[in-house]
Image (cartoon, rainbow, N blue to C red; front, side, top):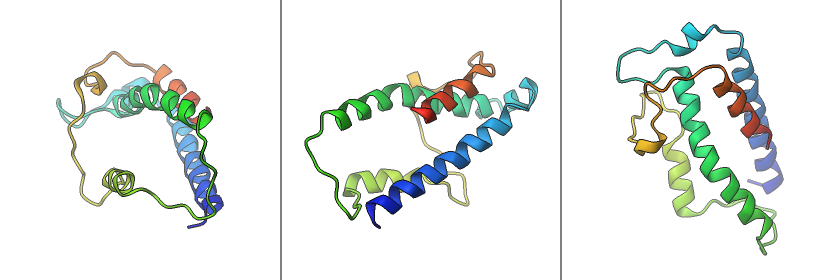
Length: 125
């Protein structure tokens, strides 16, 4: 895939996610805190999990991009390891359960609508 097409695809997907999270802002907290079982995450916990990883990865990626001496390529090619991990996290028909690090597990955290704002802020950076 051409790098410019790939970037446009990512931007389009990000805009769709931003729109969906903005829609969640109209839900009341009881709906956002509903969970299927005691061991499952609610909507706010899912987004907080992404926020926690964003807090770690976004500054690292920004720093590495800023200090990179590489030039862009016309054709985007994912590395073998990066491609594997990216594909493993894509949604599938059957729920793909994975373990997370304890410090990235928001289960039973006291969360409110600020989680949505923080997620949206990370998307804007």
